[in-house]
Image 1 (spheres, helix red, strand yellow):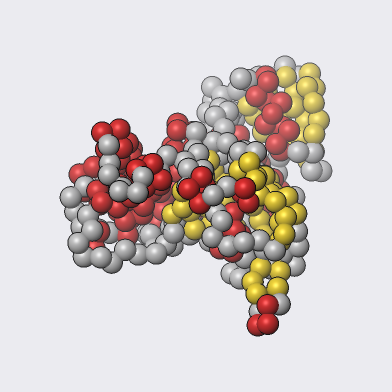
Image 2 (cartoon, one colour):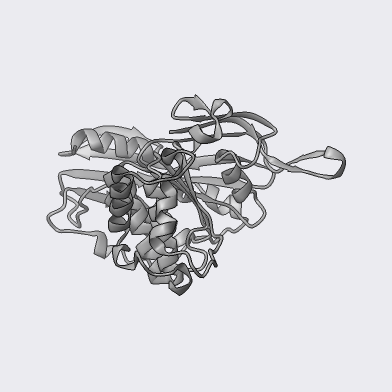
Length: 330
């Protein structure tokens, strides 16, 4: 869905001097995935998102959307590829929820902006999907922060784009609302095949729910990978300048287990927690029984998969591990 090649982003100083924020960026994002963009404050997350959406022109490089160059797309064409959810608050006292969601149909309604029957159906379906149909006639100023965010996501759904980009969507939400928001985004990705790219400071929720992370830091090359892999190989700690990030001896992974499961993981406690997190997110049923059908041993940064005590493969990549397991347990 997104291919970024040698992209240079930054800002212009006085006299037109270009100040790059990061080395040339090379990142990819596949269709139907939830990807979290993370980095310390000032790393350039918002600038990167606004460049991907076309709000800011890059200094150089290429952005491909579904194989098409962003630079070759008109604003109208881009609006059919990308919908954007920002944290800007709508304070107009007269705008109702239904009005806002209907705005998502603007790329399809022509100059007059008149909704046809099909447009009305899409708007209603979007509100139903995010659970705000009962708020249709409510004014935006009467809504909670969580309800407002759902309205903006419904508007993005009504726009009917394959890619939805959200800049800090949980910034003003309490913890239960953040969890609810993340579950909604996963539902859109997995059931509606939407590609979701969001920036967030909530590493805990991203680690538990995102399929992929884009990790950026000032002066360092952007990296991508499975959230768990970025923890296991230490890159997450390095990019955030902390040796203790996500290191805890209180992980309780027994809730992820099932005596009738088919996959047993043998590892140290911390590494095992994140390996099991990656497996359970992708639907593999974990076991407490070492004699399980599939046995995974992780040590010295290598995974060994055994099927009925026979070695299937050995790999240093968590992504490759998941790929091989999918062949055995489709």
